[in-house]
Length: 342
Image 1 (cartoon, rainbow, N blue to C red):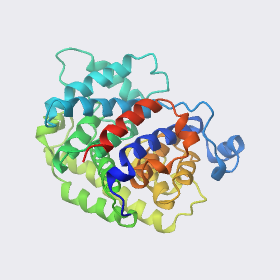
Image 2: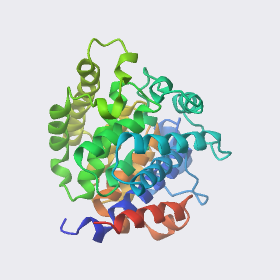
Image 3: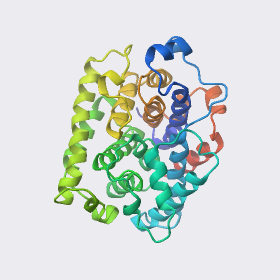
Image 4: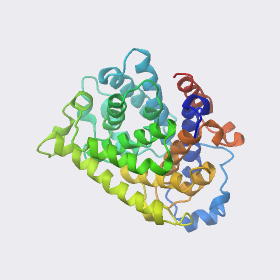
């Protein structure tokens, strides 16, 4: 891949891709593969619904994207500058009449708590939850221009931690944003798992007090390093499963059998990435494989779309699909803003 990030419009590609995956997988969530095949026909021929509605996955992705845009518009990205718009966007989403897409319990509980003036966000965070709601929305952190590695990792973990406080939710969100960023920058998909594993090892015991504050004290860990290492260790385990699946899993079988059903953050990351890596140059096929899965199909396909779109850019997606995706104008506007920056 010789095109630059701006030339291929990676941000636009990733944002549209995640919404398309979300809309394709939304009607198949909670169904097993035989039921999906009965309803949709052969998986390689699955069509985007005529009314391409998305789930809370895309809604919350846009909330994170708007918060990042607001924070960066006010200066250098630091925790306090991002926390306030994130909190406001999450509460607005929680209270919106459009929040009617079967949102997750963790997000709803935490966002309700975030409404209270004077409550520190760490007290709203659900410390025992590592649901995929933590990272199905994190792609904007991997796409926003002008961030260094510390800011990107901190922002990815902070946006997760406002609702999902489990260390694996933090690590998986960090890893997901890192994968999106690397692909947007043109990283070779064949080398991606190894690069992500090295990243996980390097950060295994790094608890960022600047971004997370005293969140770790809400758990039962003796030290912050012990707390965060639990999350990275589970991510390293899933990376091993992912590496094996890329080598051995048949693309014709349910991807959830190899890397998990995706209800939890590290499995959503791995299964979404598996579908992309099985079809790195066939983005629509990758989305269809992700949507025809027995687990959290919309979140898995949402992440697959983010990875594929970051790698291939805006031209990856069929125009008739892009034209009818819900929130199209906002997705395109945010993508164009970020693609226009160096």
